[in-house]
Image (cartoon, rainbow, N blue to C red; front, side, top):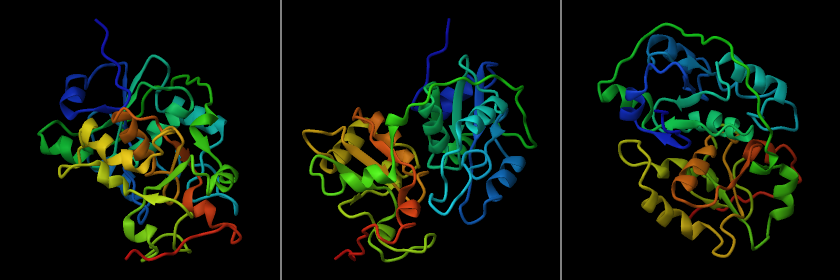
Amino acid sequence: MNSPEYTLLISAAELARHLHQPDWVIVDCRFSLAEPDWGETEYTAIHIPGAVYAHLDRDLSGPKTPDVGRHPLPPAEKVFRVFSNLGIDSSRQVVVYDATSGSFAARLWFMLNLYGFTRVAVLDGGLVYWHAQGYPIESGENHNPAARFEGVYHPELMVTTAQVEQLIGNKDWRIIDARAAERYAAETEPIDPVKGHIPGALNRFHELNLDRDSLFKSPEQLKEEFIPLLDPEHPENTIVYCGSGVTSSHHLIAMKLAGLPAPKLYVGSWSEWIRDPSRPIKQDKKP
């Protein structure tokens, strides 16, 4: 009997039941913007048995230029090489995880979907929840046998900076900023050199998708919370962004989980938007 396909989330209990299946690939995506080597160091010390590691800067981002954001997508040839080296091909079920929320794992989830690979799920609650439930862990490093990843690029899942510029002020579109409220409101900016947000954008911090245990809220609750942010006649006309197009991928998973149309991801996000000082910004403080 074939295993079910997991395309959004997988629980710790479900992963534990499939832990040693040879056609499953588990990828640890832990990362810290403040300490780029932290995730890989932690992976070596403790990870889910069989998991391999993907580094946000080295594996899941492309070269930086003066015109792009902090984490541009890699070119296709690098994507195919990285996925193949992780052991991913069309026959695999992929599970991605990070420390808790899935905010970094969502980047790999999105990249696989961008190339037409949908059998990828984020581990709900991440490694912290997995460990708290008493499931096994190991240390050291794993490397899967190289596979041959093949995919078809789906650019319609994203928008470019030029497209966002054209859509500002369009009443049929909604833009959602997934950063913390204080960054959106220009009260603080710990990472990028300019404070503020894209004009017209609404704010929903990506961690609001989670409950107190860092598990995703129910589909019903997520739908109730997202609906007021969307255009009632065109809910599919939604764009999400964050600082560098990584954690905003979390909203894609949450909205699909809620049964809503998946938004388009602005990969360049705030860090790319502010590269050109002629682009408009808002710095209105919250009342």
